[in-house]
Image (cartoon, rainbow, N blue to C red; front, side, top):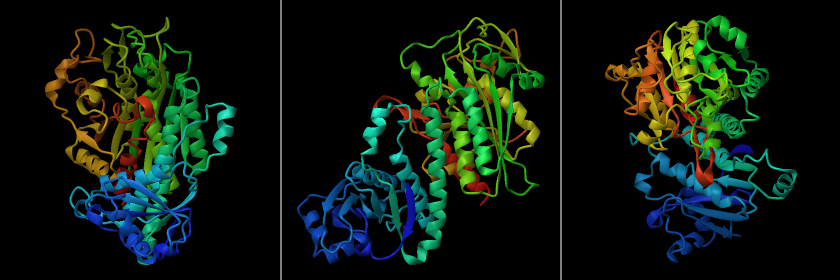
Length: 503
């Protein structure tokens, strides 16, 4: 996909399709007004006849509009002009790109940055934000995962004309800000695409070894530092909890450390820790068979860490960020851990395993202990941790827990700005007693009540040395049904958080 910033009058822009906005009650964006004037009121007539009423995300494709240099003009509804929110505007952008898929339009011009878009505080979004969001949205909608399909499918799709060039149209005085936004948006789109690819790959391909290879490839491509700790290294470090989960699989575990250290050398890093269970059977506490294929998405936390580092590396951001991924499979062979087993974590704390399907916290706790050596400015772990979080929040918001309210607010704001929202959940000591064990320092589950909270409480026991936030993305990292696939979340939130920290 090729992106560029264009300036000039809408009617002079040459492309396969020009996209302009229409508000409810007949209002037109500036570019739509220009086209209406040169076409002798063509757009006004369409509106008067009722073919386009400006309802949010509605579209109407017009061919050979008189006075326009574009072969087509797509009208997209923006809803009510005086209350257009950023989320609504993005919905309209997505609808426009989807409407053009399969039409034969390969080169499109988007004239939607001129709309006045309000954020949650009713402040107007900048052109930098709008351009970045358009680039990210186009990449998101245009994403395809068909690398595992056969040659016949590949050849068939080669004949389909898809969007391959996008001009984002702004006024001349906005060009510098737009170029900045485009760089961010393109980088973010690439990071999201990597995250989706890793999530969507089958578990017989995307193994812990494969994840490690991807980290090494990123390091080579962008001049980063990568270190892969093997099983023997983890044993020397005393990572008994991480290795306990890994011991039921023939796939060797990998503990991945990827460093983007391009900021002030004196500044401590932000550390991202991603759960990397490349397939989760539940272990001895085996899962039901229905939808078990989706357990390949149990490494989406890891994928989002690699995707975020790719995004900031593409931006060449002067920041210090370290990604840490404990990667392994959770399998039920004769060597697997059992309910009742007691593991000794790297911190020295012992854990009674009451359910082997609560394995994510068992690998994360050792990673969270390991990262103390970096004396981090902040740590955020990302994990498809609990089905309980899906019950609590559904599929729209990620669950957010933190041992610092200031950090929690920073993460929440990053989610709001990036339209990748999270919701602040309680992390009160009241819940800690649910993890009591008669035989070890703690149990790995706290029962059904507040399951997402007690999982976070478990992790909190390993994060007392630094500011920490936990994102439970079980409901947001992937989709089921007809749209089954990885979403790329929370790469937008994490990238926005880092950008804001280094603003």
